[in-house]
Length: 378
Image 1 (tube, rainbow, N blue to C red):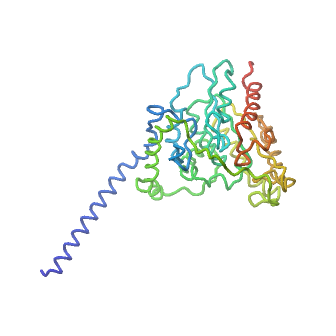
Image 2 (cartoon, rainbow, N blue to C red):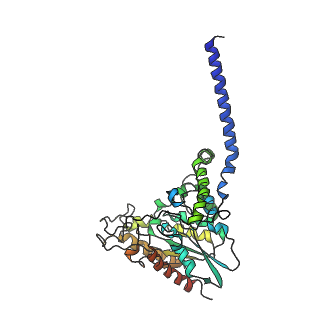
């Protein structure tokens, strides 16, 4: 056998060895992927580190000691609610919603849930405990998904602030939390008879390719990073960046009359996900709920006669507000409309984000409503 043939044979053997190693590696990955996929439930929070007061969310972990994940098991495992067994004398309130509930630019003790917790000591003869499960994404379906997880923690009352920007159909599933939890949403749809258009389910191969160890390596790395960040969270209580300066919410507005590409009432009404409110009710069952039309900035600047703020032309918001009230009144649900309760100078970097003073004005209205409508002695 000449040298060339010997070399070819050696290369073939090396290729076979490499192929064998790849096959073994794939077998190992397939075998351990189900175990790795359950890693989110394991957490050092509420064990070694303090449980977080808000669900994890952040883009600069070195400054905020926080990061954004899409693993709901890990998000809840890091939260303080996961470490506090409900007492017999506890009246447990869960507040869900968007970034205004989570508390952009607010410290954890300045948020709506924290202020309710401070201002409402007793309800129905029990000690009140309030948990912040807001998350900075504008989507009603995202709130339904989070609330489905939260029901494990036995709430006595759910508070759900919402706003028009969470209603458009195109906002329901076009966000990372939903996109990465489609199987969970499909499971909820089947179990509770929810109405959520998710398209065709993936094939088993597509599901595996998306959820195996290799394709989800960044997610698993983030799970580990979140644990390391627990030390700094426990030491500082910091979970977001608080810039010294930021761009204030716009008061001078453009002259567009469009909302998500719609210019007419009929088009808008046919493209709002009111069904998600019914989905929420199916998830929480007989648990009482208060739905709040949360405060928005009402501009007095350029074009304020045609737009309330950056998000909303007046015609679209007024239509939504009327339809929301009618929808909830027909169902006899608790509804609190606080859309214009906060002065425009108490909004921060967005038409839905409040200053500490604005949050106090807002929370006082909510506390009074809870005391009068939910906590009174029957």
